[in-house]
Length: 66
Image 1 (cartoon, rainbow, N blue to C red):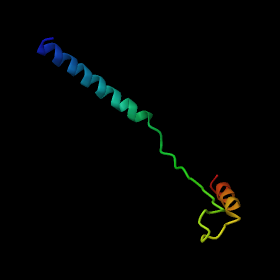
Image 2 (tube, rainbow, N blue to C red; image 1 turned 45 degrees about the horizontal axis):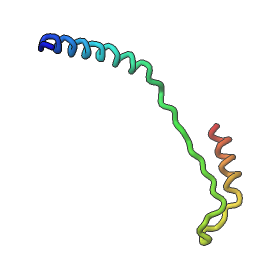
Image 3 (cartoon, one colour; image 1 turned 90 degrees about the vertical axis):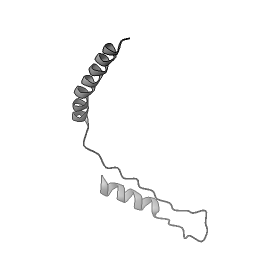
Image 4 (cartoon, helix red, strand yellow; image 1 turned 135 degrees about the horizontal axis):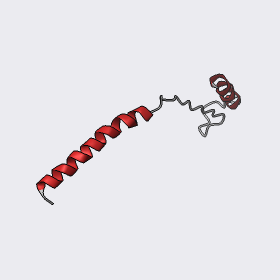
Protein backbone atom coordinates (compact mmCIF):
# COMPACT_ATOMS: atom_id res chain seq x y z
CA UNK A 1 0.00 0.00 0.00
CA UNK A 2 1.28 3.39 -0.83
CA UNK A 3 1.47 6.26 1.59
CA UNK A 4 -1.34 8.09 -0.25
CA UNK A 5 -3.72 5.12 0.11
CA UNK A 6 -2.93 4.82 3.82
CA UNK A 7 -3.59 8.52 4.32
CA UNK A 8 -6.87 8.21 2.43
CA UNK A 9 -8.09 5.38 4.68
CA UNK A 10 -6.96 7.27 7.76
CA UNK A 11 -8.97 10.30 6.62
CA UNK A 12 -12.02 8.11 5.99
CA UNK A 13 -11.70 6.54 9.43
CA UNK A 14 -11.41 9.94 11.13
CA UNK A 15 -14.42 11.19 9.17
CA UNK A 16 -16.55 8.21 10.18
CA UNK A 17 -15.57 8.60 13.82
CA UNK A 18 -16.29 12.33 13.72
CA UNK A 19 -19.79 11.62 12.41
CA UNK A 20 -20.47 8.71 14.77
CA UNK A 21 -19.47 10.40 18.03
CA UNK A 22 -22.26 13.02 18.06
CA UNK A 23 -24.81 10.32 17.25
CA UNK A 24 -23.56 8.20 20.12
CA UNK A 25 -23.67 11.15 22.51
CA UNK A 26 -27.31 11.77 21.58
CA UNK A 27 -28.20 8.19 22.50
CA UNK A 28 -26.92 8.43 26.07
CA UNK A 29 -29.65 8.36 28.66
CA UNK A 30 -30.02 10.34 31.82
CA UNK A 31 -28.21 8.56 34.69
CA UNK A 32 -30.50 6.59 36.95
CA UNK A 33 -29.72 6.31 40.66
CA UNK A 34 -29.70 2.94 42.38
CA UNK A 35 -30.18 2.10 46.05
CA UNK A 36 -28.90 -1.05 47.71
CA UNK A 37 -30.71 -1.98 50.91
CA UNK A 38 -29.34 -4.65 53.22
CA UNK A 39 -30.88 -5.83 56.46
CA UNK A 40 -28.79 -8.10 58.66
CA UNK A 41 -30.52 -9.53 61.71
CA UNK A 42 -28.00 -12.13 62.93
CA UNK A 43 -24.24 -11.66 63.04
CA UNK A 44 -21.51 -14.28 63.31
CA UNK A 45 -19.81 -12.09 65.93
CA UNK A 46 -21.82 -12.64 69.11
CA UNK A 47 -20.63 -9.31 70.56
CA UNK A 48 -22.90 -7.56 68.04
CA UNK A 49 -26.49 -7.51 69.24
CA UNK A 50 -29.07 -9.23 67.04
CA UNK A 51 -31.44 -6.96 65.11
CA UNK A 52 -34.69 -8.94 64.88
CA UNK A 53 -36.49 -6.16 62.95
CA UNK A 54 -33.78 -5.57 60.35
CA UNK A 55 -35.71 -7.22 57.52
CA UNK A 56 -38.88 -5.28 58.32
CA UNK A 57 -36.86 -2.05 58.46
CA UNK A 58 -35.39 -2.71 55.02
CA UNK A 59 -38.82 -3.49 53.59
CA UNK A 60 -40.13 -0.20 55.00
CA UNK A 61 -37.22 1.70 53.44
CA UNK A 62 -37.90 -0.04 50.12
CA UNK A 63 -41.52 1.08 50.27
CA UNK A 64 -40.38 4.61 51.07
CA UNK A 65 -37.96 4.78 48.13
CA UNK A 66 -40.31 3.21 45.60
